[in-house]
Length: 405
Image 1 (cartoon, rainbow, N blue to C red):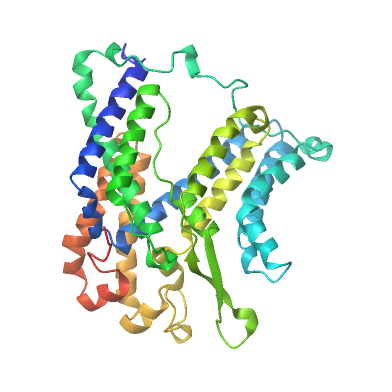
Image 2 (cartoon, rainbow, N blue to C red):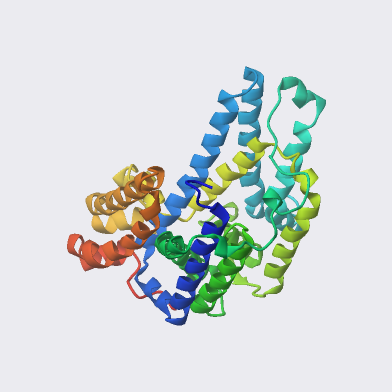
């Protein structure tokens, strides 16, 4: 407790208020506001998510290197993380390779990251790796039990009455973050590129999140929210791909999703396996921390894929004579509008991203950070149309109201 304020009861009240706010938002169909979320907001949000993964990975690796017992241990940690990230990238992209049979390529692509974690962990236990140095492992308890020796249910009445109402303030910001994170992820998953046939359920999903938040709050368990990367990985694993030629040569064919095998069974199966993993806690304690950092590096790089804002940042440097008028990642817009218009729009997104990152990293402003993400939609609706013409916005962004809710 800080200043004689019990943490867990305060945690429970913040979560209960958040659950109530999310329930009100779901019942009032406030997810309809997501129609004002265009690719402008989505790309900035996903870029922030990517940088967060990379930042956490580099922070962990810096700690491993600075506090290593010797130079060999620090180098071993960095190389383990780099190897994990590279192998995860290699295996997940194996579907588009020409080696082995198609079913084997599918299996390697779908189960690549877990196999990589297992392989690098086993390699770190070898006598050869131990001779190079020591690396830290996941700090996991050896027993499966509620922490601090407390009962499962939190005594919410242990919080003084005046603080129960004050818990509404942080709950407002937390509910805003959950609302935006949940709906932006659902919007990304239901994008036309994924070829989903069944319609989205924004309001029902938000109500389910409300119930889960309430349950985890009164039990003192971590709050959960939608995970963009994991959701997209699930979609990709259930997708049936077809090859589309990218030129005259057969080797230039690319695989694009044709349809998705939509079901509820795999979602339940994934979370059932996560629950079963609690039985193997001693094995998880063997996984090196640099391997986890490597997975974060891979996830940060993966979130960058398909982000048109980040693609434009790179393609702004391409020679004008070499621009492809059919490219969907920024070159087509530069051919049609000129480099200056694309630069202005991209720079504006960069300023928004920098502002969000500064607020997130500053402890004194981190509390209001979720609300500022919502301000991005307001900026897109009110300010951006004053700075760019309709023709520019039709090419640089998706139209407002295009999201089906």
